[in-house]
Image (cartoon, rainbow, N blue to C red; front, side, top):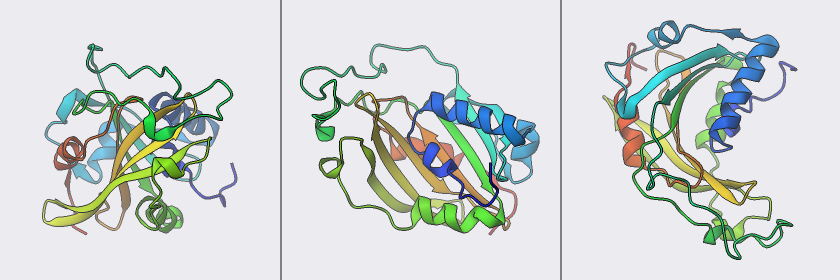
Length: 225
């Protein structure tokens, strides 16, 4: 990869799918990156007594452009209530031209997140990553999307995090298969290091700012901003 290219990690971690996220991190780290120790990477910047929702560090890697990614997953059984809703009826035709994004079925509320990720950005990418994640947020709704889909901001606010107040965005990304992926992201930069937290749900399940804040609240920075 060309080191001069803009990082796309924000895009991939905000709703393109958990399996794709895992594949992307594995693929990019295999190209020109390196595998990291989860505990060592986290311990450089943060302390966590216990992760909520049975989340546990799964893997960590440094990507070719210098982003360091710590991925958390959870062991879980699939209950009837937490299964992703099926797409049926006239919501989408096979040719993809008749999708009504605002009418996609939505799964059960308040389901625990499926994954989370912490992403540290090198100084050369930090400003662009922050702008993409929290800067010029679109006001479009699902009714404004083209047949190919795209992201919609469900909610944005500033929330307390310890003694700080940080920006948080709940995004819903509509895409292939006539399904959406919800994620919540927050700026947890500290000690001069730019770091974002991403919390993601299974396809078709609505995200929850309240549940994402439980993940955020488990993280304590070792050095204040």
